[in-house]
Length: 57
Image (cartoon, rainbow, N blue to C red; front, side, top):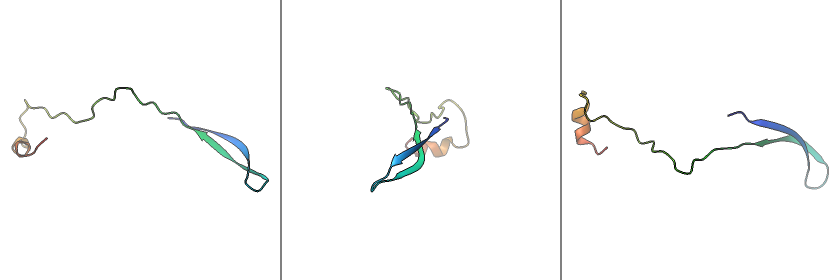
């Protein structure tokens, strides 16, 4: 995501102007988030199958 900075002058507390930047960021958040839980295939043979059978996954 590309952020863009804008050069501004802000009236500082106590008077006077302070130079700086303002940054605006937009973020997309879906209404229905998808599951990010990893899927472990159950029909494959793996040396770790024995270990997986003892864990609650």
